[in-house]
Structure formats: structure tokens, C-alpha cells
Amino acid sequence: MTKQSVTRAVFDEVMVPNYNPQQMVPVRGLGSRVWDQDDNEYIDFAGGIAVTALGHSHPAMVATLKEQADKIWHLSNTFTNEPALRLAKKLCDATFADKVFFCNSGTEANEAAFKLARKYSYDNVGPEKHEIISFEQSFHGRSLFTVSVGGQKKYREGFEPVPAGITHLPYNDIEALKAAISERTCAVVLEPIQGEGGVINADVEFVKAARELCDQYGALLVFDEVQTGAGRTGSFFAYQKYGVTPDILTSAKSLGGGIPIGAMLTTDKCAGSLNFGTHGSTYGGNPLACAIAEVVVDEINQPAVLEAVEAKRALFVEGLEAINAKHHIFKETRGLGLLIGVELVEQWHGKAALFLAAAREQGLMMLVAGPKVLRMAPSLIIPDEDIKQGLAKLEAAIESVINSEES
Image (cartoon, rainbow, N blue to C red):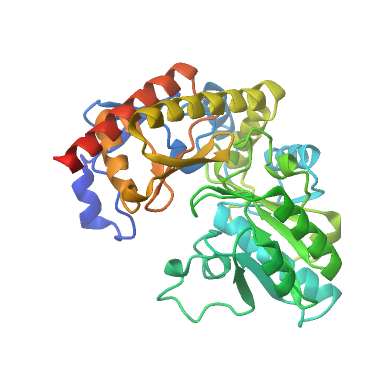
């Protein structure tokens, strides 16, 4: 088969315009380095939006992909398979969970979680206990249900009417939560760190209050750990850092290291409400994805790797502070582990994309979290030297933006 030559311009010809990808087209990756069609090299601080947790072309993942490809790729859920069973067992052993549901993405994991929360309350109380409490600036996915639970109005506009019975409160506001929760509440849904909302950490007191209030009113506590899970914060899941255990937890992104997979984890108490025929996913739990995710779990969920995440964060923070001492451009550094958000000072609010573009020109791939926050979510095993070189490129990008704005 002859492969057709393509460029970035082909995107505008044939793809729905819901994305606006950068002009360069990456074609190859190794570790925390990426090369484009013109063989330009980049250091990757983006991590596929917190996905490529073991970097690009990790040898253990590649070997497992080839091995499983020679065995079986897909069966459908009229059968089970060995990789899915092994992965589910490892996730349960590593967490509070007793049961796992596999799907293909964070959106699907959250869809399953929200359906389970309503179904559990329907089964145990009745249809009146269906209300979901979420938080402003949260992000839970792009399906109609998950975008409705998400707390960013811009993602719901044009798709109304959306599912009812969902309330959005200020994040980290315990009093607002106390005032809103009731016997009609079936679930409180929160991200331990709001990723898309600006990399904003939940206060420990807020998370503990959410747990206590859910217990008081018979509601389920749902943690969306799609972005914070699978080692991203320096513990296997962020809830373990907070010392607060949810009833339902969702995972994706880093869990597959770049292979599409999502998981909803829950307790025996809740799991029974998703009984036979109530929910499903054609590709969810397929042996190829689960075999690779098992390798990711094995590689990440070990003390040396998780401790190194904390050390690498310290290296990032030290470098960012040194940049700020020179340029006075950062207001605050947030996040945990290798989910890092840096808010720009007010004069640069709304201009985060300028730094993203300048970084690309310097050979650095990174992210934003809204128009005023630079976001980094690199490989959890990124070499220290790549961190240092990447931060040097970031400083050069910052200098170029400052100089161009002043001229």
C-alpha cells in the first residue's frame, strides 16, 4: 500500500473544524522527545494532555503491543479476556475499589459514573433522589451528560436542552456545598485538581467536608481522576494524597499511556446497580488496550517511580521560580506532582496562547489551561536533563513574547 503524502493543510480540507491543531505535524516520538515532518526536534512537556505517562515508544509498552497483537485484539463483551481480568485485579488491589468497568475514554468513564450514581439512588431510594452537585470551572467530558455536569457554560451552549437536576457551585466553597446538598442529592462530583479549569487544587478541608456531607445525606462522592490519576500527582491516585476515599472514581489518560482506555472504579455496594444490560461499551475492556494498560500500571505504581515524580516536580518548580525572578511573569504555580499550572500575572491574562506558540518555535511542546494559565503534564519518567533543557526553551519563548509585545 502506497501512503498518500499529507500536510497540515489537509486537516482544513477534510476534518471537522472542532480542533485547530498547530501547524507542525509530529511523526515520531522517543521518550520525551518528538520530531515533526521536517525533522525538527521538540521536548514534550504536554504529554498528549497528561496521557503519555511513560513517554513515547516506551520499550515495555511496545513489546506488549506486539505480543498482544499476535494473540487477540477484540472479542466484544459477550466474552471476557485475560488482560482485562489482570488489569481489573491490579486496579482493585491498588485502590479502594472492589469492581471495575472498562471503556475507551475519560468521557465514557464519567458517563458510566454519573449513570451509576443515579441508578444506585434510584434502586435504593427512588427517582426523587437524582440531583447531582458539581462545581464551576470543572470539566468532565464532551458527551451531553458529562458536558452538563461540567461547570463550564461555554461547552454547553448550542446543545441545550441539557439533562436536568445538575447544580454547579463555587469550587472549594464548603458553605455553598452545605447549603445546596439535600436528601435529593444522589452524588457530589469533583476533580481533586481542576485540570482544564486552570489547574486549581482542591483544599483538603473541602474534600473532607464533601465526604462528610455525602455520608450525612446518603449521596455518593465521585472523584474525576481522569487527569490526576495513574501516578500524575505522585501517588497512584490523588485521593490517596487527600486521605479521602470516594465511592466512585474515574480514570483514563495516563492509564493507557497513549492507548485509548478508560475505567470506572467503585465499591461492591454501588456496583450492583449496574446489573446485566444496564450499561455497556463495545470496545471497552478489549484485550489490546488492557494488556498495554497493565504494563503502564506495573511501571508506574511502584515507590521509586512515584517518589521520582515528586523530585521532578521540585525541579520544575525551581526552574519556574528562577524564570520568574528574572521576568516577573508568573503569579502562582499550582497542581501536584507532574500536573503543573502556572498562572500569568494580570497584564498577560488572555494571552497564554502567545507563549504556547513561542514555545513551539523554540522546540518545546506544552499546554494551556484557559487563557491565563500555562500547563505542563509531561511523562512521569521525563529525564531531569530534558526538564532543564525544556525550561531553558520556555524562558527563551517568554523573552521572545515580552520583546515582541514591547517593540
